[in-house]
Length: 120
Image (cartoon, rainbow, N blue to C red; front, side, top):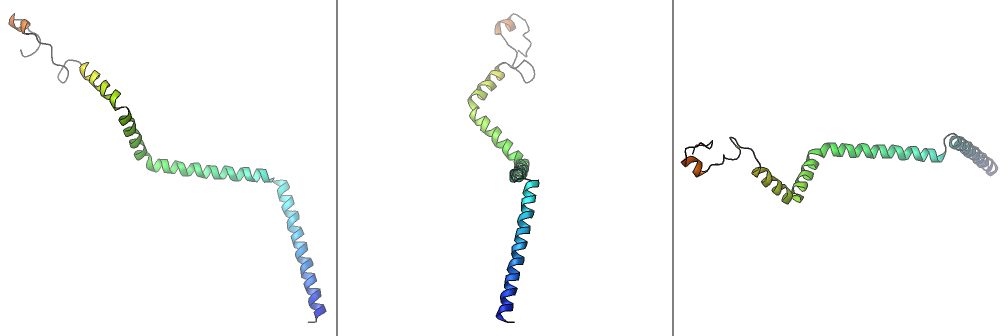
């Protein structure tokens, strides 16, 4: 090939590349007209958020027993004084019976022959 043929082939290749690039730009413009950039970004953001929420849900599902146990223990430790007070109050207010409070006994009732409801 001569230099002139090489130069013509190069110019023709450049013209073809330029036409291809213009065709791609026209296609990009048409595509952006059909679906604007804001809509594309919004859809991408929504897809990413859905994936993140699904991932967080999976983590919570996999670690739920450990999370619940930790929260219960933290609540118990934080509220230990009020819980102890409540337990003492409930113990004092338990009903009479097998495992409840012992029946009230008085030596005077037993001495006079009255039964107080217990063994004595």
